[in-house]
Amino acid sequence: MNPDEHLVSERFPRSSAYHPDWVLAAVSGGANSLWLTEWLTEAMDLRPGMRVLDLGCGRGASSIFLHRELGVQVWATDLWFDASERLARIRDAGVEDGVFPLHSDARQLPFAAQFFDAIVSIDSFVYYGTDDLYANYLARFLQPGGQIGIAGSGLIAEFDGPVPEHLAAWWEPSMACLHSADWWRRHWQRTGIVEVDVADTMADGWRAWLAWQHAVAPGNVTEIAALEADAGRTLGYVRVVAHRNDAVGLAPPITSIPTEYTSAPLLRQEPV
Image: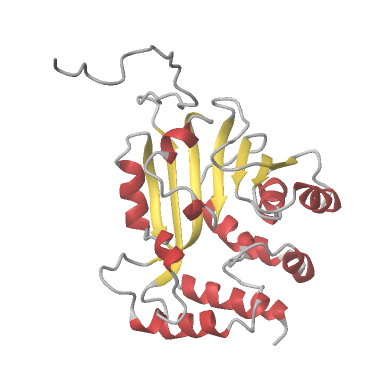
């Protein structure tokens, strides 16, 4: 089947306007970043001119989409993919004045406090955001009241015990980072740092996941078989949107602890 048939969807009209060759040339992960960005931003209030961090943006397709469709200024930040290749894509798309590529670790971001109006992360937040301390770190880059939104692969509901049998051939230990929308709501809400506005699961998200695999990796028979066998019972796409709680102060990040050595006896004096 032509990959284009898997990349056009009435559910995602904005994404479907992008040429399939361009979409396929920008593949950087296991999900259609344009579909997820379109779905996520439906639940966010992004307005032209806002400064937005696209965290874990891969090769930059989501960043270009954000600028072209919503008029926001985007800092396209990723660790794994080359920023120069991303810049070439940005220039070809004619958005060099509004999308700025950076190479950075999500835990060592080079931005000033309160620099961004919003932060988005498409199918990458699970690699670092499950850390209980990460919300405090990331929120400091947001304006008070600023938005944070994530969308990506996840679970319909958490499961206890062994991995469901029909997923065992595909599942690996690192997939323990996948969680449900309810899990993310609790994970963020308990910090008090943000207030969760939306935490939900895409209707028939497993079908979108499956369509993407057929389009970009038709030989990935293990994952395709797992998705087909699961049919949305366990796997899907998760979306969470929150805003920074103005009333909660953020602890400054600890970068070093000053100390001064004081000489002292090593052992107690031996008894006479």
